[in-house]
Length: 86
View 1 (spheres, rainbow, N blue to C red):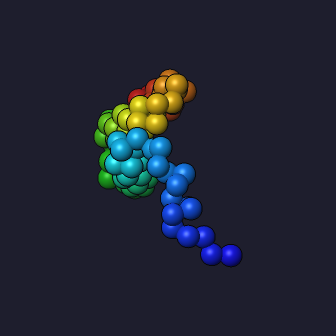
View 2: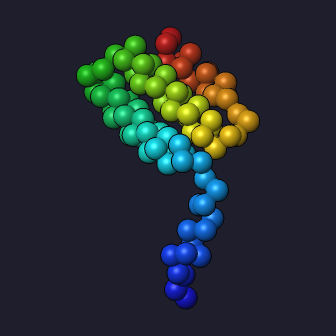
């Protein structure tokens, strides 16, 4: 079955314009965190540097939440940052 572009894209018509760039930046932040953790495991990056990348990821998550107008915060993720800072 072939789905026409108009029928498959109609779901996205209600998405806030800020959502797409926010999601794109979130994906970049996830990639940066993965790269940072890899560098940390190879001792090319220290915990403070990884923590900075993690904080950026939290900011990007908050931006996506705001763009989709979701009632959620990153409080659930704070224990990871605390563990990284130890």
